[in-house]
Image (cartoon, rainbow over all chains, first blue to last red; front, side, top):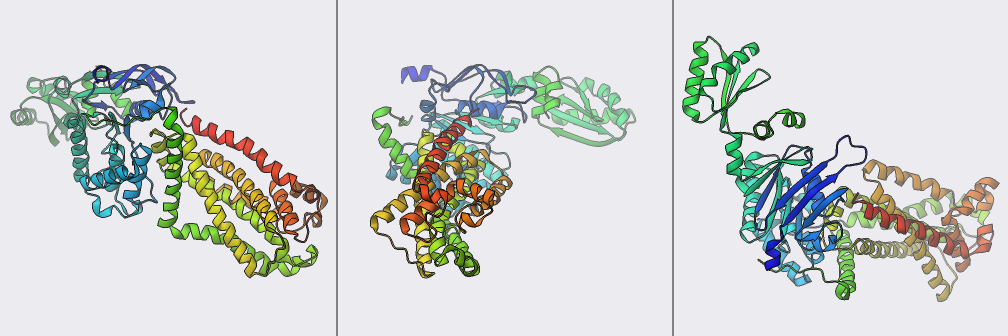
Amino acid sequence: MSEHARTPAVEAVGVRKAYPGAAAPALDGLDLTVDRGTVHGLLGHNGAGKTTAIRIMTTLLEHDSGSMRVAGHDVRTDGRAVRARIGLVGQYSAVDEDLTGRQNLVMFGKLGRLSGAGAARRADELLERFGLADAAGKRLAAYSGGMRRKLDLAAALLVAPEVLFVDEPTTGLDPAARRDVWDAVRHLSSRGTTVLLTTQYLEEADRLADHISLVANGRVVAEGTPAVLKARVGDDRLELAPAVHADADRVAVLVRPFASGEAHVVDGRVSVPVTDRGRALADVVGAVRDAGIDLADVAIRTPTLDDAFLELTGSGAEGKVLA
Amino acid sequence: MTTTSTASPTGDGLRQGLADVATMSLRELQHWRNRPGVIVFGWLFPVLVLAMFVGLLGGALGQSTGGSYVDFVMPGMLAVTMFFGLDSTMTAVSLDASRGVTERFRSLPVSGAAVLTGRCAADLLNSMVGLAVVVVAGLLFGWRPEAGLPAWAAVVGLLVLLRLAMLWIGMFVGLRVRSQEAVSAVQVAVWPLLMLSGVFVDTATMPRWLGVVAEVNPLTGTVAAVRDLLGAPGAGSSWVGSAAPWPAVIWPVLLTAVFLPLAAGTWRRLRR
């Protein structure tokens, strides 16, 4: 157990992967260390390389160069040992449509090295915990997207994995199902499982992760705890859309005294970080009106992934290209 | 932390492998139970083809075969039932891959060999049931084969051999072909293969060049051997028939030797 605790759950060094025919490599020297017992978020846009990274870590895909170790084992040379220690919840649900929920779980449990009776017991426990007990005997064709997702998650938890990989767990889920998935991840983490999750949502990473790695163009561009990253990303955003697009640049100058950071103008919309949302709103709107500029829209919002990229990668270029 | 059971090496490996094969086969049997319509249609389809040929064309075709048409065509239908297995294997494998189930299996500590062997076992069982159904249908249509137990054992052996070859072709194509459209295209493409054989008519009645093509069809080899063993009319009339049962052994073994490594290789290359 002592050595076990010393090796990181995931250790990637300079991992590269290029798909044949693709213009740019999917992973371009990914360095990543995930400590045992943490929830680690890989945050990035579509195409940033998150899913490729997960597929390599779970031995579904082979990398071209670099080193990747999961739970202390090399994914390339010791894939079987890795697979015995991990759970995977892929981006799309990967369960058998023509089996019932219970049949699915019992099958995956047995393949995951549980005894027949053990698999049946575990299946019933998990069906109960995820609120699927009533649908246990129904074929998956009768399941909703959220139910399928939960079953998918349950399938990955049958044999309490050392490391659980969760690829965009809540994409396409309604808010209630999303909360259920979040609860499940937290519950698992509280029992010692390391969780590596990918997400496009800053809010999701913020709520779940102890540590976040921001991924762009196949590498990690920024890292830290959510608090540290958020401090760097900055505060709430005040967004102003002047009735006349051409006034945007003037608005950007006007808001400067009230801003806690730089203002950005995109498509005639001014976005500026502010510390005290209530006061800033009143002050800025007053100043803009005094200058004789009409506003079509005013909004306050929390920082998005785009803001994070704008702030943390120095330029907005990467974020914009990928958005 | 809960102790995680880890895959133990070698000693338990075989036992675990067999357990995995059983789990994978059981999964297929559960599919049968959950969707009985699909599986029963698969069993009845050869009967449909048989009814069509015997009822519709049997009268016209019977005269050229020197006996009752049902006696001539039944050995062919037994082989066709095995041949249709290509389609069911391919469709199932392709569906698993497109639905992400294959990915899930590959993320578990299960060997690819166990997954593929489990499919093998279930599909063989499926085809054996299909075979029984078509035999019963044949008897109802007036088929009266004259053969002893040893001959029947040899017939079943040759049919299983053909089915195994179809299995590996089906797995290879199924792993390669992902879209439902492409699967449909392959499903259509098997029909000319079926027609261009000695299944429904004597190859001697075809134009010479077409007859040669039909003779080298692996299906014709098995059909000729089965006719020979069951003492059916038309046995030994062709070149392939006179060489029976060797083409019925050589073709499936050859196809398996080619497609088994191809299927296994494709499974491994899913990682690239």
